[in-house]
Length: 356
Image (cartoon, rainbow, N blue to C red; front, top):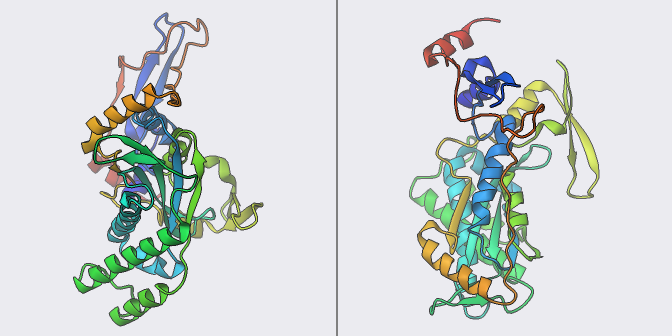
């Protein structure tokens, strides 16, 4: 968290160095400071999202897609806080295996789907709320290499998917306890955690299957929000004072836009709660969207585009910045005319430790 705080604080400042941009005609000459490129930085979010969506748009299958959301009960939040990497891995594994297992069943689809999963750990008011968003193809590839479309309008029965997901995640967590890989939260014991998991196995969990979309790029754009930028964007901040940070959020229970006021310490505590640990993959692919299935995916893309109903949406690249004077020459970003030296990390640490 200290690493994230230092990098985000210095983002687009002289502390990270910079370069000079010039118009080819000489109309513009200005200094641009470097971005920190931390995945939780609100200032670095736009460019990386656009690049990811542009790359993904060429890989998405031209078929209908479904948005599925897997949410864990609030009783497991403390376990997630003490086991963020392990719990996140098991949560995404349970969601992926539940979809893959049911859709491979001939009763529902009988084919291997494509799945892109995104981990989301916060609620709209920055509360702890781990859940997984999945972009799932409304169809899959069968044993003969042909694309099988979803026979009905519904991807899977919600209650069946919920029961399978609940059973898989509980089994993975109990197995991690038996193997000693799960860290038990302070103030509780192994027996209490096992009892909690047993109780949660008898209540419904929140698993939602959204309506079908004619193409997956709209849902992919939603998933891209969790790729970079952290839990809250700058536009949601209403005011910042020494006494309070005020931001707005939309309450999912009634759809009403509300404001929340937190002390700066509470706000930062909530915000840094959702900085992902190093090494945690927030976006994952499986099935037809796995990197190992690129050749199968290309074959399916050719099949679908040859069909009368085959469609494909495209995400266009960001328009390059142009000179405000001539409007015909792109501002040069490739050639660095002048380099502003980046300080040595040791100098940064010394400066951070100096009193204000």
